[in-house]
Image (cartoon, rainbow, N blue to C red):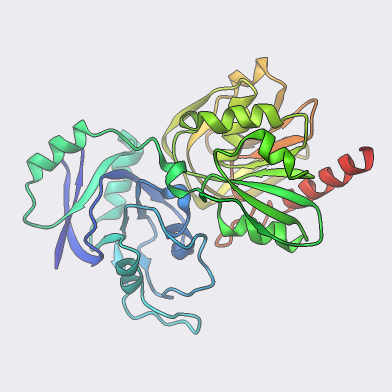
Length: 359
């Protein structure tokens, strides 16, 4: 069956359908990863977005129950060049089409993803929607132009109730803005006694758990929309150790008085080079973000930049000069990406150990 991908600039791409027919307007973004499509689909940082893979061959190793980054995916569509509905892998439990139907995500394949990627690189990300071939394209384009992007993505994907993941080590409160399970795995691997809390949990409640540290997770959308969390983080700084990843990094920066801005087409992929400014070493990182911290705005804060992107020189990490607080823009827990930055979890643990010794 045919299916359309319609962009707000009036472009229409005709391809073939797979997945569900639950069509929703989303921000069309591209990801350059060559593998890890299951982790990408289940990453809740993509809430409200239609993800297009630049690597052409998708679906070849199927879907399994072990590699999810969340249990309920939140992206609005999946776009690929070539789709393989007969996966060949000993871990595969179902094909991608079956899975997307089950989680109500529409897909399209058989279109020129390279041409669309070049368009987004030149014009920036734009609103788009998947549609049936008999759809009224003109009406849809007009509607896309009128509609605004979502502003409640974090609320959509965050847990609604606090819950524990018990262990015997340091107690860490994980603020869930759309947390990837990879973060839980890395902290649990290090023996951390976790309490996962909703995004709008107050500083008072978090501190009542007597945490050794607070983990600020990744998440979707514009960080400036999450005002309640910015204020909470402001109140937590100086009272406990804090480590932020991706959206968590942006929220720390905003809480300290820095500014963020929207990138033209974002960083989404598993091969982004980042330099550690303290050591000079270069890490190959996995990334997924459409906003970044304004480097110039750090000057009037207590934050210093610790990591920088080599591709566009954007800020990739900060550290507080007075308190045990640090963050990175990329994903050190990346399950389908490189492991160069995994040491950051050890640094978080060492920070908590040091603060406990001084207490």
